[in-house]
Length: 295
Image (cartoon, rainbow, N blue to C red; front, side, top):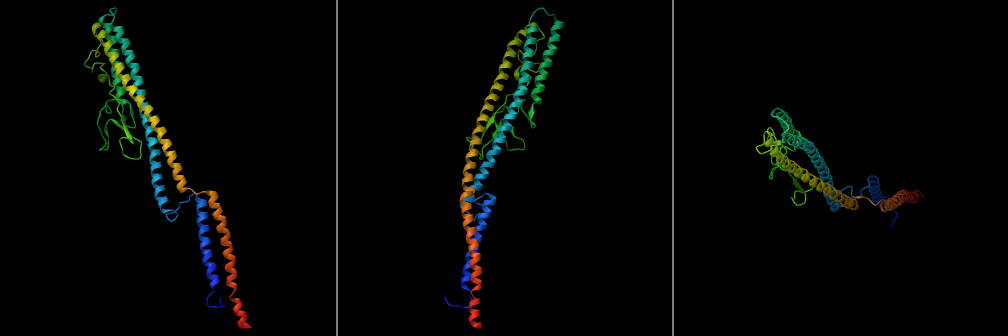
């Protein structure tokens, strides 16, 4: 190579190598400081696209877990209301048994009837008042087999959405909660059957069977809710495992291998330092030409 003063090719070559090494060093620093192998699309365009889809999937599944937990809370609220209704029905059965015997006169039996109707009114009040986040649970609003979520307020059976898509076989299912008012259970003066009154001995005797049927109807609702709660708990376990596996897959794509990247960092650091030293030496070489001119 000729000794020239217009172009310092050695310095240009050293500067180019310095720029490349310094850029690689900067990438290693970014990866080590962020913990991400894929920080920009330039790092791995396909990997970035897959990672973002996985992150969206993980976020929606985690929200699905919260949705299912909220549904369990709703079911527990409904079951709590039914537990109180159970106590009222037991008291009504006791009152009907009391009124069915012949040792009470009409005035006393009417007093028993008054408490019987009060218990029925309380059952209806509990059914109308039991709600979760404004959703009434026991008044029959959730007893329909049809669901319509097109309006601001959904109607019909309760739709529990926990999956990341909209597939009825994978992402949601429905919960129905029967009507638990006194009239729906067939007791109290709003009902039309044998359980409407215990004001006479004959009516009280007939009411005993009607109250048994009411207790069975209430127990069926509670059993349905218990089965739904168990199903939701299993759904939550499955969703958590799914989210965990997706997180592991996303980590393998996105996260940096610190040991490997630290090796690259040290390599690039040495190359950068070497390039800086050689650039300094290359910049001093044209002085040799000046010595010839001066000589």
